[in-house]
Image (cartoon, rainbow, N blue to C red; front, side, top):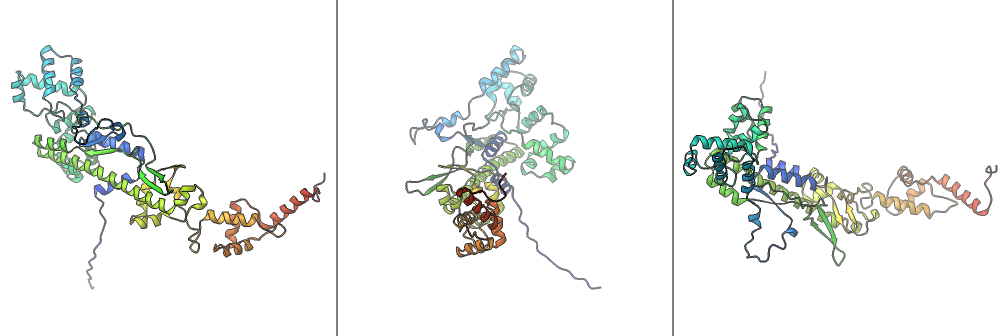
Length: 447
């Protein structure tokens, strides 16, 4: 028996999380994109949504003037929290301690000083202080404040959702695995199967690692088409993205730098680093999506300029999604995702970019579209000799003279599409029409 050993090299394209996010975002429409940005901002303190520029135009008077708008992005929650404390049943002493604790939290909502230090400058016992903190953790919103650490804040949030158990408690001790999304290592650590490990991972990653920071939102965005076609004074088409439809987001670098200086837990630091990378990745994915849409719009405007100007289908040139993808150097599926929920605003109304694609008639008539052939066929029949209408074969020959090569069978199909009868029925109809005009009834019509 002869043994043969073969070696083969197999290359696979591994999609990174960033690539998956970009592809997923490409197929989102404006509504979905805004919702996705707001959902991401709820769990990621480093992703900030900004209001549209027209809402702040009157607040900026000079390029060098100090802009207080950014400070307003972080309104103090102290008054709201103190009002909540006043509604809790506490002794006078405990209520005083609770209100003083409000000013001991950092910008995330955490108590960063040790119990020993805080009991000293608040002039109370460690036991009483720990008891008051525990009451505040369970009673106040946003859920997760007055925590001693990121791990503790996640515990509070999970307890509120009734998801805190010994297994997830063990995982909270290794937030680096959650940040790196190492499902297999989580499964091994917690002694659970991969499905449960994935569920635990998703439960934790949905939590807010900085609950006191106000959640960004952008309610003033209008649900509008993402692309706009305008005409310049020379009648040329100008393409641009619609600012009213796209969320404006940025990463909060100052917040990340601040948290890095106060966070001592290396696992928590890894988690915050992952959040910051996630915020940056989200913005990059949005930029790629916007750039792709703009490139597509520019090519479509160039190819279908006459149709966009007139709105007449006859003016559409043959152009397929595959041709567009080739011109952009993208996969056809990528272009399809990008255009799935996209709309274009034009002076003639809102159009679907899919309407700008039209297949060529056939391989020999790549410069013609079906609409153009149907129109030419209709003209030939309307102008034919009424006493000797064109047969389908003759119509095919007439179209051939105009460099439109289609078969007799196709002529018959197209003729039916525009609801025109065959030559025999047309001739019969012409004769009956002439008879009626002359005042004579055709035979067999008398009562």
